[in-house]
Image 1 (cartoon, rainbow, N blue to C red):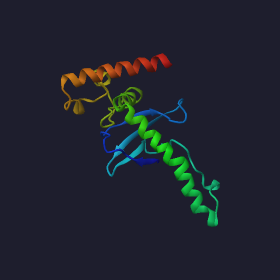
Image 2 (cartoon, rainbow, N blue to C red):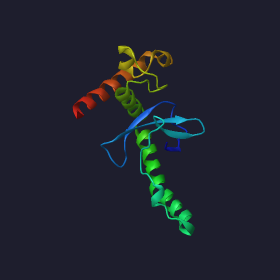
Image 3 (tube, rainbow, N blue to C red):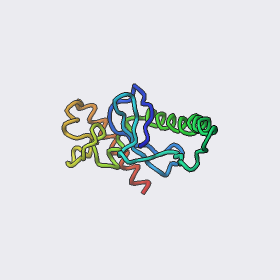
Image 4 (tube, one colour):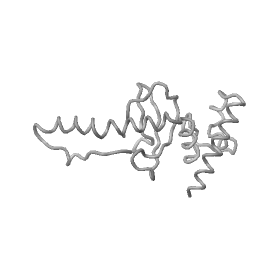
Amino acid sequence: MKQFACPEELAPGYYSIQDPYDGSVTHWYRPEHHAVLKAWPAKANPGPSLLRKDVPKGDDRIPFLRAWSDNVATPYAEAVRTAILTDPIEASSRFAAFCARCWMCGKTLTDRTSKCYGVGPDCRRSFDDEDLAFLASVMSKTIAEAEDAA
């Protein structure tokens, strides 16, 4: 499972973004404790991969791994963070719309009201009416965009 350093300003929850390098693919992420942004679900493996067979053996191994991390993995992680931080509300509503799960806790959304907001009844208690109206407008926009793309 891929994990990246998580920006402190990113609220707990679940986020969906298009792959920064391949816009036709969507990935899901969630911030965890210890400032880590993890791919979701647990077996997900988004982004560039380095296969063991591609890593040289011997004295070239460590410099190769450092260069790959600096030139491939780190820029990808930065692109993921930037994509989420550009519009975290949009990224969280996209997660809720595509997965039918609460973007705050990840539980399955079962009733129509929860699907409208993208937030389940337990998590919804922390929002006032103005916030809920905003969430409903973002969710309807996200669902309309997904239907237009299909």
